[in-house]
Length: 189
Image 1 (tube, one colour):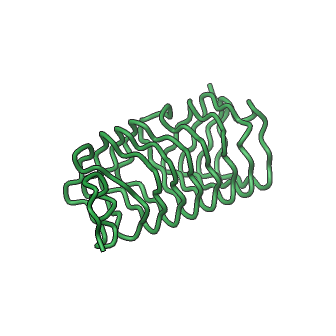
Image 2: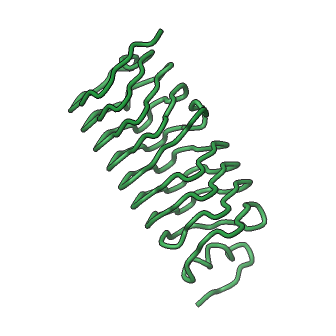
């Protein structure tokens, strides 16, 4: 049975490799905490918020994120693909997610606001109704994904092959169309 923590504020803590394992956090807030050394096992976050936290290179293979908000966090090179898929819901604002992986996850309705999402793996990911608000998507991969009704209108630097990614009713800006036409080697001015 995991240890249970409810409605606790955690501030300026650097967690060791196994320190949060077998724990469940509900309605907790983590501020200026460092999880980079963690190798998570059987950890659950429910209705939690992370502010100014570091997750870069953390191993989060066995984590449940159920309505979790990340604000101004550094989450580089993190593989979300093996997270618990039951009630998986995450949102990112002002975060750096470069080189992370969301391969095969269902991210329906997720919001990414003012994020750096460089070289992120969204292959075979369900991005239905995801909002990419003012995000840099340089070299992110969307092949075999579903991005129906996704909103890319204010984001930039993306290249998405409409023949390999479902984009029905997805929203793009006029300036962003070149990111959909790259494979045809067309010049848009």
